[in-house]
Image (cartoon, rainbow, N blue to C red; front, top):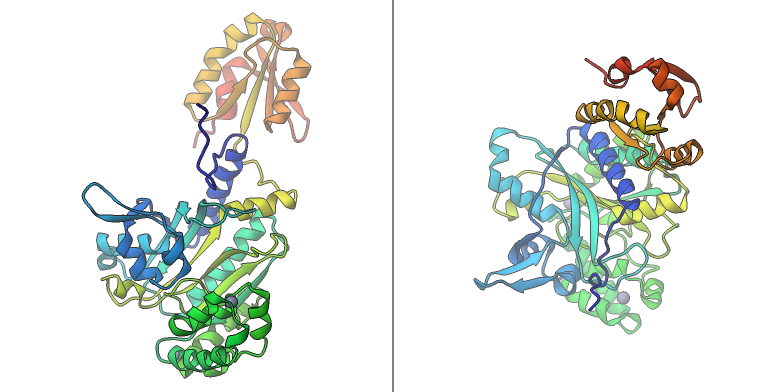
Length: 418
Ligand SMILES: [Zn+2]
Ligand SMILES: [Zn+2]
């Protein structure tokens, strides 16, 4: 019997796992400087939480969730996205009582039973943030700019930022009605999904990938001119701040997010490099969701980024995150070198220095090759000659400069004492 992983769910093995870790660390660092702190929530939640937050008429809830009854007859689901759980945790912990503003980052697997394809899996991974308790449009703009910084830090270039306003509960129903009438007039051209959407959530027809629907949507009424005064003002403030932050964007009135909870700002990071699955990050404002889930009436703004898609983009662009793990490779030649240096290596590791060594007495050439492969920033070379002199040759692999360091000074050389 040979076991394989479940369709659409992948193992992340070395060396790929190192890129994952680096991406996650970079996100924690970049978003951390904007005040986002990590939360970790369970992967299983009560199904009701997702129905309530994402919306019962959405494709995610209707078709894609992994749901089951457990032995106590509780209906549970693997989380299909991160916002519902994060908001639930925020409310349950009472965090809002201590701080008016909460900024969270989460990293982890999400589950949707979709058709697996390039960059799209049934267990996929997201890095997301949520800012709770901030009404100002500055936070909408700041998150978009922050995300832009993050992608620039990764070296990504070929993408654009698209923003839209989805209106609010004052103005969206009016537009929905007008848009619904338009859809009805196009009925003969629409696919089955869109026909069902007319009743439940007409806006989603704008998102339909069916060629006939795309054609029929060409002269659809767009939301911009139907926004209420507050929504219009919010949208223009977001744009004002984005300009002040130097973030390039375009307004695309055809952006509708697949989840029910968005109001006003919606944004997407779009690339042409991933085929039809062209958004690799998206988010928006969800005022009202926290209250809907039993919490205080506070605003929310957040986004989620697809880790697999970002890594795919980096791979296709030949991008590698700068190696931040500072590996010191010990090229040891002969048993005396090993005997003398093993305690020093152990001391370095205990002090948190990442050290690798040659265990099996390979030639210096092959040891240097391995050090290169591991991206060592420094190689410490010790043979019989060095043992006699009591010094190590310490070579900087980037500058190729080398110096001699006494064995007794080696630990101090690598461990910064603050
Ligand atoms: Zn409005
Ligand atoms: Zn359609």
